[in-house]
Length: 188
Image (cartoon, rainbow, N blue to C red; front, side, top):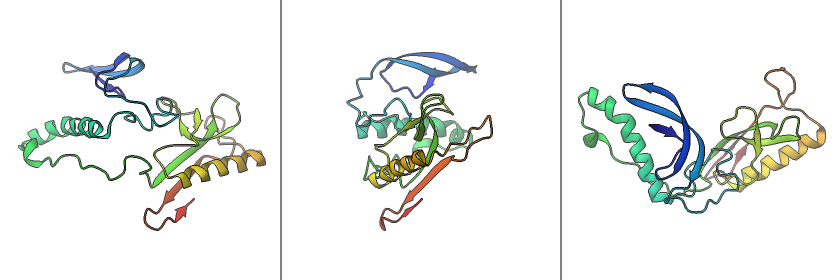
């Protein structure tokens, strides 16, 4: 069974979504026991937003996990085309930065709890409506989190409302930020 968002070595509770050709896909319901690969997370939102699933796993182990995932995806396609995976696959390249590497990020407006105060951040894991205030996201540069906090407070003071998909009311939907790595210029 392949369970999305689970890490090797974890003890989990899951439900099966699909079964076909002797394989099954499951949905993670609960992590009962952490993987021995996991150390302490650096992000306060880890496990809540789902944006940094492998955080807490040492970077070299993350690369191994990702390499296995890529190989599993490509192997059947390449074999059907008459290629051997090891002839073509060059491996996963290591990034010079494992934190604050995102140069573009889209944050959403909403609320953390129904009818709560205006939130601006990332979606809660498994939810398309609930939004976490992610004021210290480790994926983006500190400039981006400073802008995010400032924008949220500005619109809270103005009493602006976020767009509610079902009612088609409200105004605010997304805050898209892009930061030039070399120039430091920021697009809001």
